[in-house]
Length: 592
Image 1 (tube, rainbow, N blue to C red):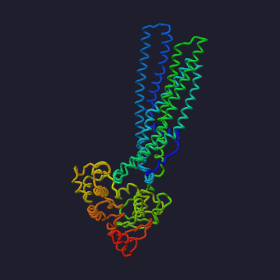
Image 2: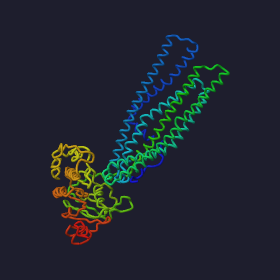
Image 3: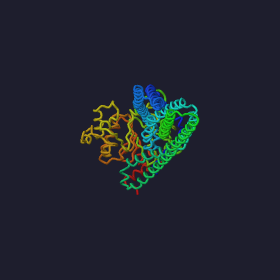
Image 4: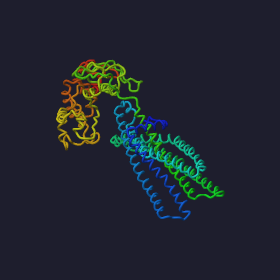
């Protein structure tokens, strides 16, 4: 399996999770009270209806006395109660649905906001599809809980209370026997929750992995087809899909055994007992047919809300599992590095100093070891080395994607941790090897939400990096639409746009992570020409794979296994005939 397993496991604490979900109701307290009031009125009108039938049977049907006025009034009252109950149920259902949509909207906003602040290490370990599943599928399950389960439980518990009161009014002795049904039903619910929780949890995990596999497959479709991996991907997808199917099938088995069928058995046994009780009572005294009808009707209506709650218990259990997964994201402790202190230093000169910096992603294996160097304002410092030597980790720390826990990074004499995030993002520009474009148009991708960048500045930035000619050739020019990830553009064109995006904010410090590694020679020449202009007055930290692109750097750092083993200018390093010298000869084809 390529994907990591979903890291969230265990049976959720339903009580604590449910209480936490209810906290989302606080901003909508008035709407909730109105919905509950209408629900109670609808329940009362529903419970009263069998009593009218009892009155009709006992006082008019059995005596065969049918006064027209009273019959009309009684029929009109019954019909009015039926219509009123239906109208009130529609209104309360609509209120609960609107309430549920408001809550889930806020919950998804909270999740998305949290995802913007979580440390990148979380996304290093968690497949994107798993996170997407929690924000979409899991919140949808919670929506079902607020939309149907909450109102159903409140309504049916109210109906049960009303039915028990009516049953005690009809026959207190028999109603007392029926009270024993409550612990039996509660026991069935408790049993269902305990045995179904692991099943629901496993099903949610498999659904998350299913989304992760889909996300991975669709993004890597070109590689899959070119490397003829369709059969393997189908097999892996089929394994996850089959595991999800087995989990859902197990869920259906539990539902079939512990929900409606078991309740029907309990209802049938109870009905037999009630009929036996009235039959036995008929030997000693007359049985009122209206009372018998009303009691049997109430008994049927007693189990109807029980069945409704048992059916909704399925959704409730899914919602609790989903909520637990959602809250584990909201409770994730490892956040993106924050600013320390309340000062507001500014970046003006662009001096960068790494002072004895060591770093590890997993806490046990150091990727960087005792890194120290100084990039003076306006200088270009190039970082070279074999794959895995730690080059990109230097950029990650400089951009404060990960916290600096050992050593210090200073910018203009200020500790990196004390510089506000908005100042870092405003004064530092980053260009990655794989440019990322968003859905929109050319202008929005260059501006990227920075409203202080005018349309003229967007055009100036594009001209500066030699992107203006190809942009104007596009249909729509600077308003030409860009699909997801810029799939309709070439790699070189996407990279030029990412350069223009960086130049649009006029940064003081440039961080280039092999920015020219994936472009053709002609495009690289254009970028190098732009880079030579960009470096004037700016500090540049450039990771390079091709040594030919950094020969004019003021300082070249050679990394090997996380350590700086050589440093100097291009000519100085060649003269030493060390690791850099061997790398240079190898790239020039002069080393056998």
